[in-house]
Length: 260
Ligand SMILES: [Mg+2]
Image (tube, rainbow, N blue to C red):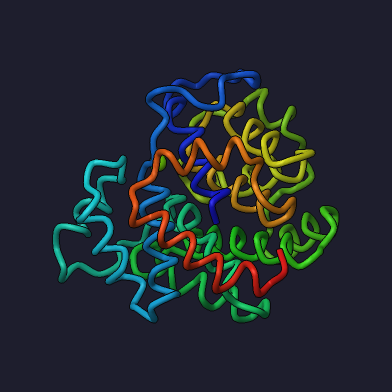
């Protein structure tokens, strides 16, 4: 789960720049956590404490305002009576990594990913993006080979997975839809050789950098294991105490038990 947060923080200075550079500095002074991290923590807390996903998202979103939330989400946060708003945005995918760790069968993963998405993102693409991301995390941490993961995601969700990062990068532009950023983020993991290269791949597409690196980073950590020590140190130094506590609590409940 720290891998998703790391991707968000590493990608944060590059959002909206459209840069296709690969060899950028991993951390800058203004690298910081954004909405992706806040809402990933919210989903983790919902799972740990048995809370409703919507209630946890509202709680954290309102307590950590101004972190780059989408306009409709801000409206949803402000109005407790507001229901889901049929979004297909990648907000459902950027917050779902904890689901991939916390449940133990494909059916459960798909069901919980849907539940975590549909409190806001009840469009079928919003749900699909969350399910594909959570399933990728699950398959990565339970020993699937990359080719199996690629085929499973392609077959189950209809995403075009037979592309390389280089092919995508050539014509890729900023895209906040699930359907235009989730498959690409998963490919960034598939084309990586370690945690760092997965995150660099995602940011080098020049799109929604923090969210794509969050998705790719979450899957990469599940596949490769613990983050490099230096990356984990830089990331933790940029998190509020409450988030660190949640990461620890989540990892001791799920990660250790899973042997990853
Ligand atoms: Mg963000």
